[in-house]
View (tube, rainbow, N blue to C red):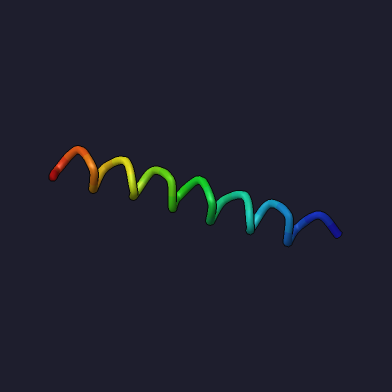
Length: 26
């Protein structure tokens, strides 16, 4: 039942990580 929570959390973490990496590159 908490599977979707983990999925959403994973997406958020990936989004933040990707945003930070993009900011570093720029």
